[in-house]
Length: 464
Image (cartoon, rainbow, N blue to C red; front, side, top):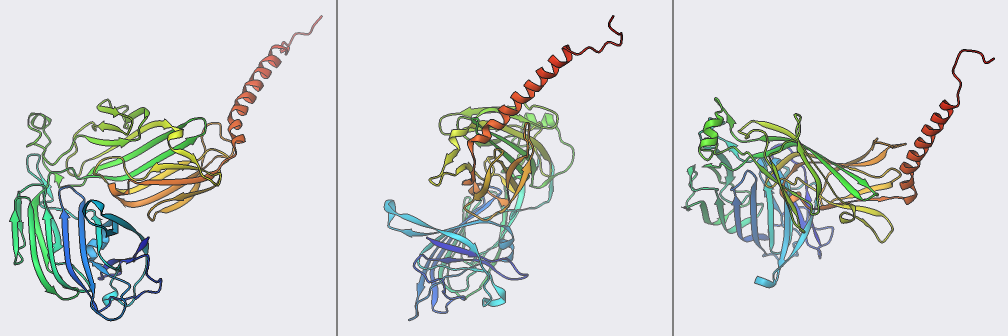
């Protein structure tokens, strides 16, 4: 298994990843080798939603006599700022028998790159997927209810690379064929919803050719500014989940007066860029589902369940236009045996999904709080990517000393972060008797007080 090393941005520099193959030494080169060149590079940029997805395929050659252990990929400062996730893999085999070996991602600092460039490195053929958030700029910034939403996308027609690139091509896919304007770099072709830049030949290292595309994108720009998920584990048989949402339409701001009559008459025209419903993917066998806001329960929701998944269709109290916000809570219960297991070492561990259950939604700030049973010890969380973690105490009903809570925080969360994570902890079953004993003790004391009260003589008169 290889790994990707990431480094933080420093002023006007480049961002990248360091990809190391499993057979490479840990003491590989720390700067791009002049003997390495990229024979072909193909980029496919997907702009069909509010989240930008880029698929990159590289064919690399080492023309020198010495062994080159690293291959570097460079990113612009804007891309580095909005990079949400990156995945890289080594393809093996052909066609139907093709397999992909994933590579890990870890931070590093490269001091020898020009201008402090931040880079990724790797060997052989590689395929990379990286996702950019907040990379579509609404223009105009304000639109009326009946106007379509137009956005800018900025990129480079050629791959920003620390190597000589022999041949390359760029494909950009837009949601519709309504493209207002785009930068032409010879050769450039347009066919329906796709722009094609290239083939380009023989570009030197760090060469860039800026392009700007202005196109229509009325897809929901749904952004959860803050999501707090509380997962409470009860060894009595259930898992309680509660999610607090701060939702925003992050597209072009709405201007003028909103007419619900016009919206209901022709929503595809008088509100094309707005959205009035979202779909949340919930676990199978979900029960006791509720959806409410500060006013109370919201009845405009529909739940579909089967043995593989559950989908909750939710509608806010009003459609969301650019700049509008909505706050609500989703809660549900699931059977404990579906998510709580025991490791070979005797530890209990929760296996739950990270990320936001809403489809095609970006989360600026995600906080997950896993509330462990009272008496739990040695908690630890295992995630497939970096995130901030710490412990806190939570007091609930019938608690004596409080429950240990594992808190996980991450920013810039996209749908690709919806992967399982685990929380391990030690728990002695004797602590399950704590709450029943407290109830029995409370009932015993209550009846003892009642009996004592009935046998007490509180009269002031003296007996004869």
